[in-house]
Image 1 (cartoon, rainbow, N blue to C red):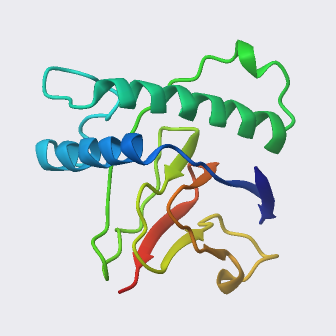
Image 2 (cartoon, rainbow, N blue to C red; image 1 turned 90 degrees about the vertical axis):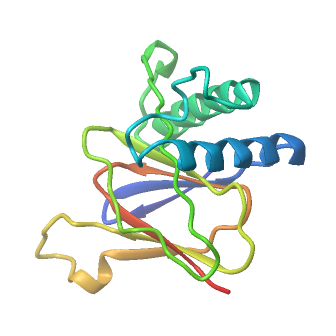
Length: 167
C-alpha cells in the first residue's frame, strides 16, 4: 500500500485485484442495494433476505477489515491491531459515466475505505480537507487521484471527497 501525507493526513492507496466473477457479483449486489434502500439507510454488510451474493459480500467484508488493519498499522504506527475491534459498514454509491457523486464525508465513523469496482473511462477522486488552518490556503487543501478498476483508497472520515467520471 502506498501512503501520501496530505496536510498531515495519511491517505492509503493500493490496487486490489479480485477475480472478475466475484467483482461482477459485487457490482450486482451494489446495484441491487442502491435500488432497494435509501442512501446510507442500510449497510451493504447488514445481510438479510433481500441481500444477494452474500458469500461474495462476506468475503469482501473480511478483505476490507484486513485492509483497514494494515492501513492503521502503517499509516499511524498502531501496533497490535489484531486486538482492535473493527466494525466495517458498506455504504454504496455509484456515478454513471459523465456524472459525479455528491461531495460527501462520513461523520460518526473513524475512517473510509473506497473500492472502485468498475471504472469505464477516466475518473477523478477528489479529497478536500475542511479543517481551517493558516498554513495551507484552500487551493492547496485539495488532492486528486485517478483511480482505475481495483483501486482502494483509505482515509480518515473527516476528509470530504467526491468522484467525477468522464465520458
